[in-house]
Amino acid sequence: MPRILAIETSCDETAVAVVEDRRVLSNMVASQVALHQPYGGVVPEVASRCHLEMVNVCLDRALAESGLDWEAIDGVAATVTPGLVGALLVGVTAAKTLALLREKPFLGVHHLEGHIYASYLSEPQLEPPFLCLLVSGGHTSLIYVKDCGVYETLGSTRDDAAGEAFDKVARLLGLGYPGGPAVDKLAKAGDPAAFVLPEGKVSLPNGGYHPYDMSFSGLKTAVLRLVEKLTATGRDLPIADLAASFQETMARALTRRVVAAALNYGIERIAIGGGVAANSGLRQQLQAAALTHGLQVYFPPLKYCTDNAAMIACAAAAHFQRGDRSELTLGVHSRLPITEVMQLYENSAA
Ligand code: KG4
Ligand code: ZN
Image (cartoon, rainbow, N blue to C red; front, side, top):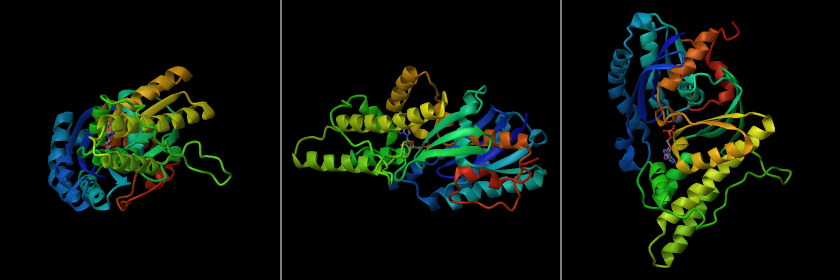
């Protein structure tokens, strides 16, 4: 039962957590959302500086709340990829320094593997194989989870991430940043059938469509054109109907891919991760589809869906258990496909 302290600073949350295998002992998250709000998105330099200010505070509190001392910690982990390089460096440097000082193994973690492992925090009995639909502000992928470190990306977005599309549509409708929760709330008062919007399909050279890849820029542009057209009439924008129609279309596009993959690969369990997992429209459609097709869908609590360090520690604990360790010379990377995750470790065959 490895006890891991992990640091997550890949984007706009400074997070530190301690887990014992799949059990969360402490989970500190300092969100920078308010800081980036005036800019309508994450400003990388502002994010790095804020991580620097917060990382030690979060570290002290996470360790204190875990009730453990350094003696009891087996390893120190940090997200090394993907993310904002300056932001990643803050967490990774802190983790490596602690590993060196406290003479603990260091483990670099892939952020998306962390999102996959979030489902184990609330479903400790869950074991591969399962499908993971990852829908966040920066990523949208459908991943076939075969084992720890063994993943196949079945599909991903060719352009905007799902959360990014929610944020952009929210801006078009005059809602704040981040826009997903605002669109979700507004959609409850609207008619999802008010407007017909394109679901977005990815063409294949043979004239067909990719069964699992997604494209949301067309959907976003369709909302933009609709807003322009409706604005030209001089009447009030039916923002609730627009929000509801957009959300319904997005949820349908995601649900269609998940169900197709589950049925084609014969996988009954589906875990959802990322901030968009909070979306009520997506939850409703996935749950309805699961009922129809005899599938099981797991929605981790929101605190584990959005960026946090508990999921990073949980992924690190699984690698630690396998004997995986990272070099202290391991660098940070703005991108790395999840299929390459074993590059982060040595002794992986041990
Ligand atoms: O996973 P996350 O916290 O951060 C990233 O790693 O990106 O996801 C944030 C994204 C934002 O785009 C936000 O608008 C979206 O998740 N989001 C939602 C909802 N709550 C958060 N989108 C739709 N409906 C929601 N209820
Ligand atoms: Zn994330």
